[in-house]
Amino acid sequence: MKITILFFLFLFPVLLLNASQKQAVGKVFWDKNNNRVFDASDQPLQGIAVSSLDTIVLTQNNGTFSIPLQTNDIVFVIQPDGFRSHMQETGIPGFYKICYSNPPKTNFRYKGIEKPTFDNDSLYFPLEKIESRELVNAFMIGDIQAPTSKEIEFFQELIMPELFSHEVDFNVFLGDIADNYLDVYPDIIEVLQPLKTPVYMVFGNHDINYRSKGYELQSETYRKYFGPDYYSFNRGNTHFVVLNTVWYQGWDKKEKRRGGYTGDIYPQQLKWLKQNLQLVPHGRQIVLMAHIPLVPQFADSTTLRSVFSILEPFESILGIYGHAHLNLSWNYTDTTYWFGRGTFIGHIAGAACGGWWVGPYGLDSIPDATCMDGSPPGIYRYEFGQKNAKKTFIPGGKDPGYQLRFSSPPASIQLDSLPQEAIYVNVFDGDNETTVECSIDDGPWLKMDYTIDYDPIIVRNHKRRANRDNWIPGYQPSGHLWKIGYSENLTPGRHVLRARCQLNGREYSTIKIVKVVP
Image 1 (cartoon, rainbow, N blue to C red):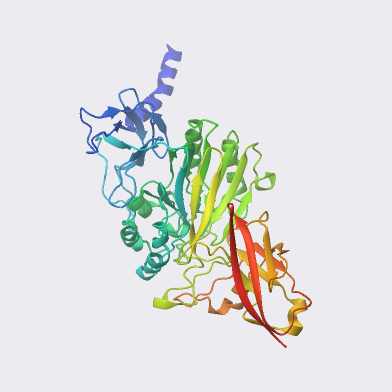
Image 2: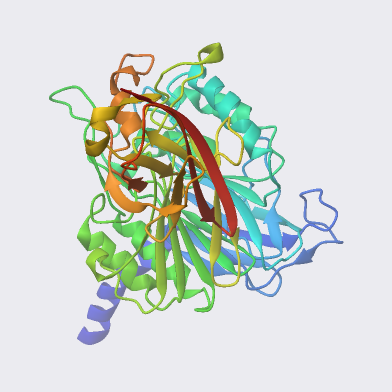
């Protein structure tokens, strides 16, 4: 009798907890007539993953699911290949339902979800059928980072036309949608509405609601406009995972200013990621999309080990990031805490805002906005295939063939300084395996040397690189720079420099005229 009573006393709190935890029920179905309502002509979908911010369940044979909810949660369907959610007016697929039963009471300057959005109602997820293809194309767009409507106009002029230049299946914005001033979100949504392809958002450190006490409420305003700050979906043979790699340390009450942040993944999200990847066949390609790169320079080493250990069973992994305002690719190895047998490639996909919308300014006051490594503002078009991915850099406001530039010399150079100087070429999407050649006055093509150095054009123009607030960013060594010394026979007068390289099976070239001054 004593054992029975003790067992009951032990079990009672668990039963009470389960009884008090809310459950969301719903249905996932193929919306055959595209009316977004489940009716007799529609087909329930079995085995579809449905997730909250904490738990993942699979739909039953009649398309139904039941999932436990936290007080304030978001429920979303992990879209299977061959289906997608209907696009909302915002351009963001309606793959999620905000389920806040008791929104946090805050005094934030930028409001989050203020009213309850869930009252035990059923959640219906209509999916439309689309073509299932092995090759999937997408735009990856780094930081817009627009503090005001003026910078949104810059984005509209420089980047939006490029988003119409190729057909893609979807667009991913890799965080820092705003630049601390979160009231720009409606304008961002409006400028993206002409796009006819789905838009997926990533949470960045400049999307933090800085009045929050810590990471728990850091994305409340973001969620109001864009939905969950971590989620996943499937297209072709690729499983795409959006992560929130920002850990905010909270508003500094003493100094009355925003607090710091680190690159990290908080425990609940890590738990979700493990559940998520357990449902993915090991033969699938995994594409992580996050703002702060998962590398030791930015992220906590414990976090890196935890995330990468979950990824170890997979053969092909790609991490695509924003944040750093430069173009860079690398292979993960044990020095970056990768111990899996598969290939894991990292890529920082530049920035739509380039170097924070800095000058010099051109026509209509549109900034040059060169990134810290000398690459222009731009976007990347990715082609995801069976086990690999191909990327193409698309410069903003330039001809697509603008893939390299002579960064040195300037228009003229002194004859007696030639022995101390070098010719520099920046190949914006190059890496240490790219071959770059140079020719002077139709002479032989000479192989240039790969170097990691500051781009001379950024150094020469440093003081001119101010934004509208007269803030001047620093500069970083470029990971895609090549150099070669001058010919000893170069004479005073004008000379023709040519450079060429191969990228993605295509040859790109550029020409520069330089005057040698005696």
